[in-house]
Image (tube, rainbow, N blue to C red; front, side):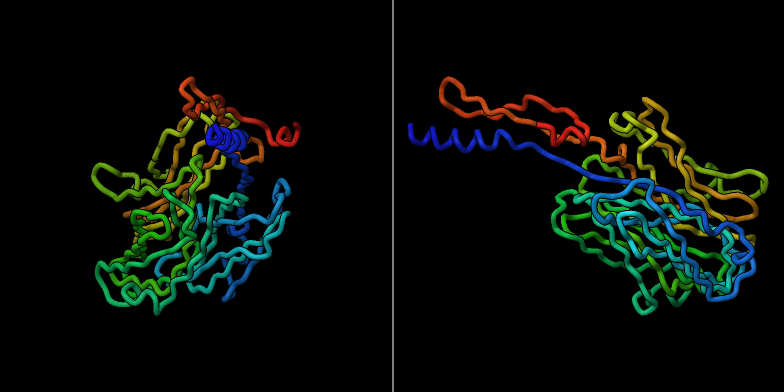
Length: 358
């Protein structure tokens, strides 16, 4: 009898325990670099800072992830650019643009995602020329492997990556090329492979990594080569946007308030002809309407760009407002033979403003 009383005390105290999840997510786009005169006729090096004000104040200082969803550069010249985050507060942050030239970059659209989520880790890694010894010299198809490590609290992490800066030497190279291949993530690390080809020398690469253990968050990468079955990269029609679509089903929770879903996508790889025309790439998403459970990613090019491969990465999260509180409440039941059984009795959602009202 004494043992049974002890067990019941322990279990009853745990009956109040449930799974609590709280997060704040916001996203937006910075179009500060959009064919203004200073970017069309630049003086190098060009440094530019754009201030972002959050639509809503965060409760604590958030992490900020950048990704490039649209970029254009002039043909036949080395490309050297970078974006990074600074001065993050509860109310906003700064996006810093650096363009070293000589290629002109008249368009650079940056999507940002700011979040407070203890299930998410964001890393920015700068791979320099001495690190990229296989890619920064030589010719032909080349590759080099790296590994990223993260806090070992993620049993089944979702990992994706975005290119947020690079230095390409393309003298005598027909193609400006870089691609990221992601390995299978373990609980604390993942292998990453970078690839290039021809005489394209990748002398520097800035990569933003997104690591999440949140079961509500979806992340991944997709890509497509030019082929006889996939003509979206053909530049014969210079007047239309040539795009490829990727769709996936998302959980029903994304249809609760689709206007506040976090749909973030950016460029993570490309193979573009260096001299046939200026390089232009864009990644976007089709809006999810009410009751829709289909996310559609659109990526491609336009104009005289000859694009033979393009890769895009994405991050999806249901309504990013601090709006939903997800939990499971459990009751303990003692059967007739005095065996203690765990029974899940309720699973529901509550608004954040209801949490402290008891």
